Length: 178
Image (cartoon, rainbow, N blue to C red; front, side):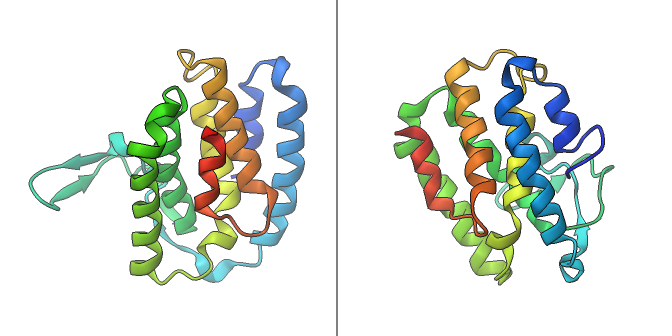
C-alpha cells in the first residue's frame, strides 16, 4: 500500500512535479499509517486486490462474478472496500451537482450496509490509507488525463481527508462537494 511501484509512493511518482508538495505531505502521513497498521495482522483475510466496478460482472438480481482477482491474496478487507468506494467520489468529481442527489445516497448505503453486515468494527480505523491510495490512483493525471483540475483536487482532498484522522468518517465526503 505505501511503497513499491503500485503503492502510494509509486503512484505519487506518476503525478507531475507540480503536485509535489501535497503529495509529499500525503506520503509522510502514509508512513505513520503503515506503522500503525503493521500490528493489525488479525485483519488479514483473502481479498480481491483490485476490486472496482469494472471487475464485477452483474447478471440478474444479486448474481455476480468478480473478475481479475490476480492481485488477490492475504490483505486487509479495507483495501477492497476502498477500491470500490472511491468510485462514488470519482464518478461525482467532475459532476459535483450529482453528489447530493445521486452519489451521496449510494455512498452512504454502501458504507452502512458493509459496516452492518460485516460487523467489522475496526474498518473505519483502518481504511484511511487504502482510500487515500485509491484516490491517488483515480486522480492521477497519467492514468486519467480527462479529469478536470477541480475533479483532481477533489480526489486529492479525499486522500487528505482519509489520512487526516485516526478514524475515517464516510459522511465527511460531502465536504468535497461544497
